[in-house]
Length: 95
Image 1 (cartoon, rainbow, N blue to C red):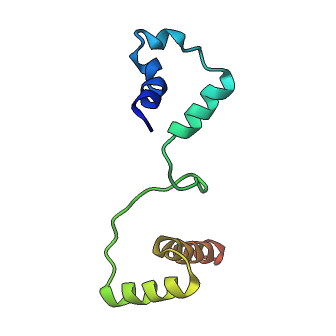
Image 2 (image 1 turned 180 degrees about the horizontal axis):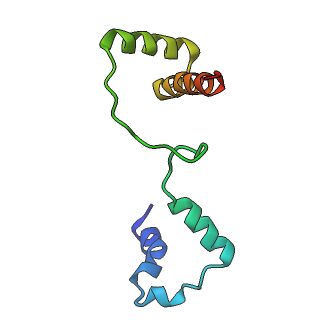
């Protein structure tokens, strides 16, 4: 880019009060902006998720990690599936 081309390309940046030329965004543009600014994260499942701290024996954790890799799921998902299976079984057992 030559010096004259650069000057022509950046001429509008030399103007004062360029913000006065801006227009109010349309509702569609505002919605698009809100979606773009929204914090990315995991999709909400059920009532949402909560981070907890749990201590697990190292050997059991290693086995769980191997199984999670084999099943191609995240560790948290594997643990949640196991916990859900136990809760479902306990709820359906007659007392």
